[in-house]
Image (cartoon, rainbow over all chains, first blue to last red; front, side):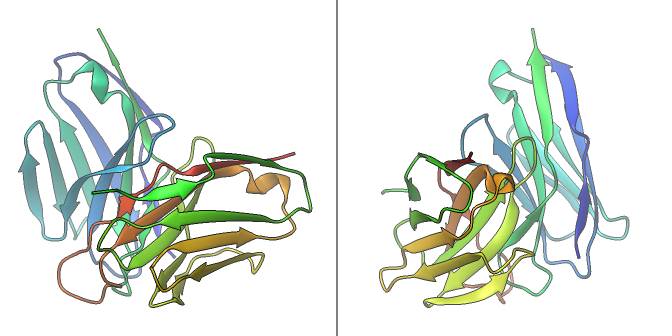
Length: 111
Length: 117
């Protein structure tokens, strides 16, 4: 089975930087995803990592260490609209493109 | 270009009843996955359909079944509903089943909120 852990809740201040960590234990590895989900809405894709290192996309960056089973999502210059749940997910180790999600981290951005 | 659509938006059922949820994939996509998201939890993978066949299945009982039509749309059926089946049911579509280098991003629909009383 797949085991994915991430903090349940985090709070950060507008304009600041926040790092959301994710650790995983899987029977194989075929890539890790981060999704953003606002309350009552569908998850939307943020990033994908399959090789070690940092992937930067605007205010959002994602890091992966396969040897440590560890990833983080870095959000810079936080805005109030960044208040949402952030979901860490690993792709099915068999190669199929379905995903196994963690419980999600609910981020609250305060003024 | 229409994204993933799901119907109905909300649904209320009682224990023991049966329910059918529907999903139309994003234009050009041929693979549909279904997820169950309980309140405060991440989505849990139910199953995935490609070429009208169930290709992958998560840890869900046989009460959960599905179908994919020639136009790639899909249905999720749940029989003998339990209170614990109350959740947001998400449909996600992608191009291709997988098994290739790289990834096929999954696009999620808005979900169907199922309440079982």
